[in-house]
Length: 331
Length: 255
Ligand SMILES: Nc1ncnc2c1ncn2[C@@H]1O[C@H](COP(=O)(O)OP(=O)(O)OP(=O)(O)O)[C@@H](O)[C@H]1O
Ligand SMILES: [Mg+2]
Image (cartoon, rainbow over all chains, first blue to last red; front, side, top):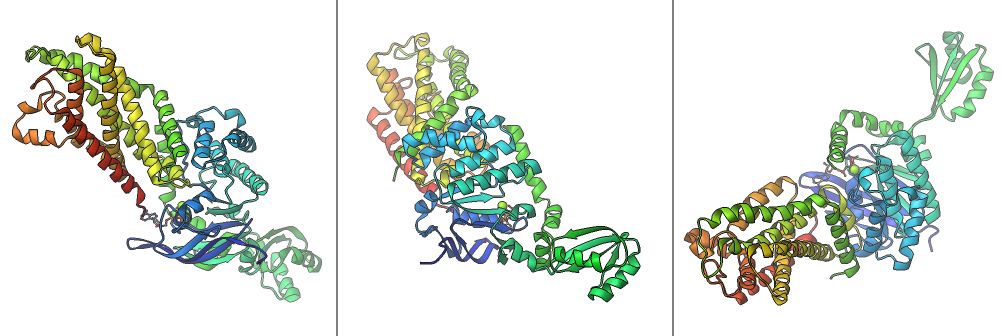
């Protein structure tokens, strides 16, 4: 028996929308208990992949299976083993928090006697017990997300899908959402498959697949991915920058460069290099700063673009936000 | 395959929402009252009572039909709302059959329409019609049949409708013509042939005619029922079965 069982298996999966290939021959597998992340810019094919895995879309070619059930042949078994938090909210705003959860419990055929207790338990974890009987209409974006997480886990799924779980939320709310996800993940012992285009969020994953234009262009642990970008960046401000550059070249064989009043250089394992540098440098150092490569640097290296640039130049994001706030206003 | 727990909870959701939206109830009840007393009274001065029934009494079965028509269409169009606001996904990814969703929507839509049809019956004393308890039961029975038929038709349409834009088109080019070409306001037999043919392919015509059989007992055309009751019931039942089957089928396919 293998050490770790793979709970999601995807082989040569493709999805074609007319002339557009949204998902292009991707393969990956996710082990039980893992947090697996799909990182990619807008339109990369993240949501499309989730839609295929959760049986909402059928693939053009290739196969996908969850907990051993084929997503095309056995959609019911697949659906029973997964919980979903979609990119856009799927709560009924005309119902209360409790009613939304109860509806879910009935759809998933949760044991009648367990339902009430389970609902209370999940509301407790996401700290919405006090809002149990409030209409969703009056909930904030963060509260809705928390409730959706509680709902996604209500029926004891084996895999939880989170499609951009914190999109459109402020950084503080984003952190709380992550605390809940991590708490629940440990508590419920589930596998998490998530998508994001926030770098910081991807750091929560055990393993990441970077997806761009429907293709997986890299797949590894966040640490290993970042090793693909050679070296950390050390910035320092000294009393004599020109002399420091010369000394560094001589002592370490590294070319440092000047940069607005300071100098910077690229080394591997910067945290080990800094003490050596300070010790060996005859020039007095005013400040030192170590910058680790981010996943954004990885994406930059692989594609020549940054994910953030995409977000900024792509007005799809703002349009979507507009549509969403517009809808909220209508409700 | 139909799973009854999901059907039950889908119905409960619709009922809760129906009772929360007071304006919807008010709207469906105000409409027939307005028609009856404004249009009905106005026309009564033009059309003389025939075979013991006045024009006001003649349009009452039509008003029940109208209430059911609007209520059923509104209930089924909620599918478009569900889709637009994302809630449909919650149902589509649940381990339940598509048929259960369709049946849940059909049953809840039927119930809500029947409830409103029954409420309309309180107007009966103001119209000088007297009904027995048996007639009341018959009205409820016909209401169930007609409501189920129109709701199923609405679900079939909603399954194909991708946006709200389509809703206005449906209202203007399907629902309103269905109402005007149903024998609700003028007898079918007095219509010009072209319109009469359209009326004869309209399921609501037979539903309203069945109401006339129950409420305007012993009435004769033009103001009384115009088709045999058995034909009315057979047509509505057949169309109901066809619509619900097509609705269930159209819900099954995915991209
Ligand atoms: N139903 C559809 N019909 C046609 N094209 C589609 C459909 N759904 C998605 N696409 C296209 O497929 C591509 C991938 O879309 P997808 O929603 O999977 O991207 P994503 O990675 O989730 O992006 P985002 O970060 O914006 O959510 C996009 O170009 C999108 O326009
Ligand atoms: Mg997406």
